[in-house]
Image 1: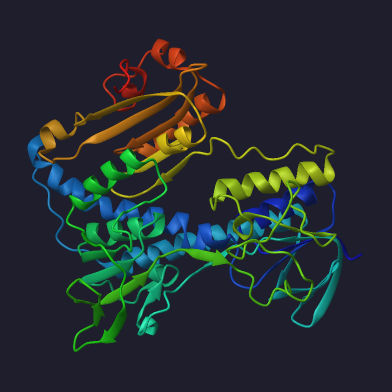
Image 2: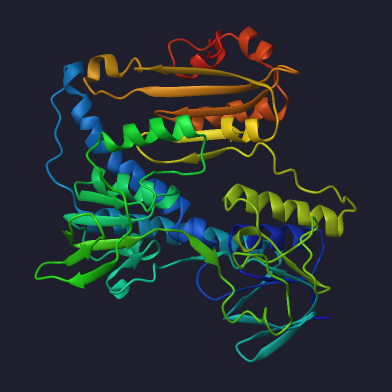
Length: 446
């Protein structure tokens, strides 16, 4: 064999698995056809968060008068933000390349395709490996409607030539909601089209409802249906709906989800089994039905989050090379939506807890954060705890408000450790802070 491990895809999971395996003395190669760092570094988490930071300054401007400050933003230059973002991404690409080089991993540039359970072809050259790991991530899905060619997808968004004065985002999940907040905060008249009329479906319902109310306070227009066609207009594009009046915008962004990136990977040739939704079926050791071929990250039916992909890579290494067969624990994975305001969560929603038969108490608090007593902005935070009455453990924690992602990360440790409501109650809060509300809720909801 040419290699002990051949990784296809140099995203979060692929790079982590490749360089850590090399650190264990294995001969490793990673093939990549686009860019190092995958979706997260190039067209996902990192550039998204940089754009969110930019969009928050306009909100801050409106909050300063009550504090005696006279501030204003005179202009916004999209090319400066876009190009500075790209420079940072290029710096991170270089860091990823150095990590691979310094670990002794061979980087093979080009499109890789499986040709057997121990062989991969990259641009006409065949490599053999004892184990092959598929980690090619996801790719944006476009709605199948007339005029879809006029849209840009969630990858293109980060490289727009000009910033739109009017924009429509199609979708209602993480990506769509975050993009709408970015566009709105940077000055675009922003519409978001949701088939269900609900943003962030799948999250704890009362938390989701509160988040939607707060998000729409900023002036984003929610259209409660999906477009049925898009046409070129004299200026921009005219987007039609079945029941809602059409809107004319400069840019239409599709952000209705991503699908596993399996194109021309050789999946069908080797009869690798797929789940519904085209995710690759694996066991708890990331093994496919074909011996020697493994898959992880956004290719399999697990939460599509960068930290999950990293954890899967480390679990794979322990299982394959360190004699530890313990499967990855997917319970209590924290996550955040960098909407404005943030939504963050860990553990079960109220609906999931009831569906799973837990006897629960629900604690919740809605309040105006101290900052907004002077800012004049009518934003309200929301916090919620789900407690198992049988053993007093906190099994769900949810928040909408500024810095929710930062706050929930800390509480996720406590929940992972099995903290009870009594532990929360006995913890002294940091005052004055929003976070202390999680340790001062005493009366369950009736």
